[in-house]
Image (cartoon, rainbow, N blue to C red; front, side, top):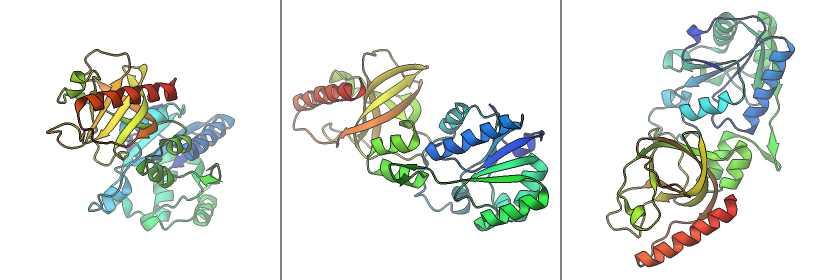
Length: 309
């Protein structure tokens, strides 16, 4: 998959099949669209292209709104999309100027003149152009005018639940990592660099790696202990993750995200680490003394191993 940081970098090709959207989460609904995109491109002996945007439009249009939380960082999204075997990924800068393109200008100038689209595949709730004014009916009319095809993908469902980024965010905010995992099609990810902490875990016999999440828009699950998969330097491990303030420790500071990797004792400082949250096993709680905390950590490890093995 070739990645472009601006649509101007892309050279139009024949039989181009495209889709457009934020694709936050790259969830099961998105996967269905991407599968159709690849199938249609192969049928036409053509090329598959995903046009997405960064920053998220709401970050630009409503910068004072700090409630927006994303399922993926940009790095996570690119890595997930690379697994879909797309030919091209265009991450176009979203600006106030770009947001002023009306629906006709967006189709004519971006999709037709810059991309050279032959067929457009979109999700069921797709809107486009200034103030999201463009509807599917508008798109059909413009496609007929400019000579390309349009296909709309119906909403995908899981256990009678319509798959959407909003529903996944809601599950994560509740700590329901099972539901989030089923709707995403993979475990929810927390990725970042390992930074130095207070070293308290080592004294308890449970050495931890503190993960720094730099993207302030990344959604963080509620405080608690989670059974997790861990990837470090392309190697896979299992472990348990704590999100919270460590209430049993004096001078604990603010919220930390720290993972204990089972069977791994090497130094991880400075490495990039990715953690997939499988299941929340308990709430964060305060213990009267360190011995009770150690005992609970042993229970937590046993429970995580039972879930993960």
